[in-house]
Length: 139
Length: 139
Image (cartoon, rainbow over all chains, first blue to last red; front, top):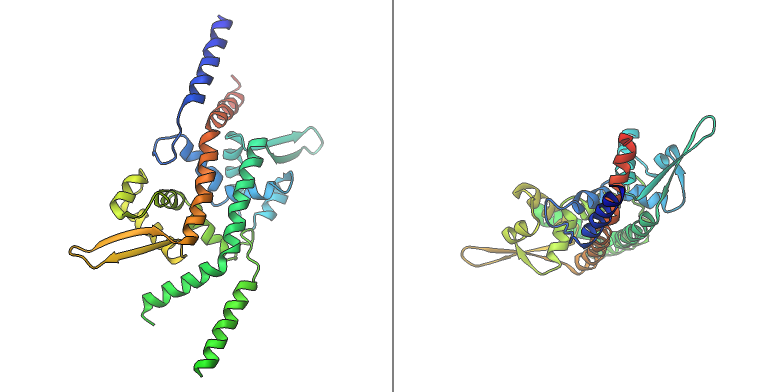
C-alpha cells in the first residue's frame, strides 16, 4: 500500500511536470502565482528580501507604505507558493525571519531587473504623461 | 520669451533625467507606473501586444477573463505612461489599433521573461503549495 501511494505520488509529480501552464488562460494556476509575485506588495517584498533575510518589522520599513495586514497576507501567499521561507527561531522572545528560497531568489532577480528598467525610464514616462495630459486638455 | 520657455523646458527635462527614482519610496512616481505594468491586467496586455498590434476585441479575447471596463482602464494607463500607442485610423467605421511603443516592447520582453520563468516553475510552486497546506492541516 505504501509503495502504491508513493508510486502514485511520483506519477502525479511527473504529470504536473508535463503540464503546460499558461498565464493567459483565466483558470490556469500560474495566474494567481504571477499575481502574488507581481502584486502591488509582492514585487517589493521579493525585491526587498533580495537584499538579505529580514524580520517582519524591518521588511515593513523597507516596503514603505505597506500595512501590517497586507504585509502578512502577501508574505503568506509568497511562502505558500515557495518563494519565501519563514523561519521561527526557538529563542525567547521567538525571532521570526523571512528569506528567499532559491526559486524566490531567481524570481526576485528578474523583478529587480524590471524595477531597474522602469526606474531608468521614468523620465520618458513622465514626458509621455505630460504630453498625454496636454493633448487631452487641448492646451 | 519663447526662447526662455524653451530653455526652461530643456532644463526641466534635464532635471527629470537627473532624478533618482525609487519604487520602494511610497511617493515616488515610479511606483504607480510599476503597478500599471505589473498589475493583474497590465502584464497580460503588454505580453499580448508583444505578439503584434491588436484591436480592442482581439486583445480582450487574448487576455482571457478581462472585463471591457478593466481593459479600457488599463489601456488608458499604459497609453498615458507611454508603453502603448493607440492608433485610430480614419476609416468608416473607425478602426482603432493598439500597439507597443519602443519602451513598451522592451518592457513587455522583460515581462514575458518573468511569465516564462513562472510558468516553467509552476510544478515546484504546486508542490510547495501542497506541502504548505499539508503542514497547516497537520495531515
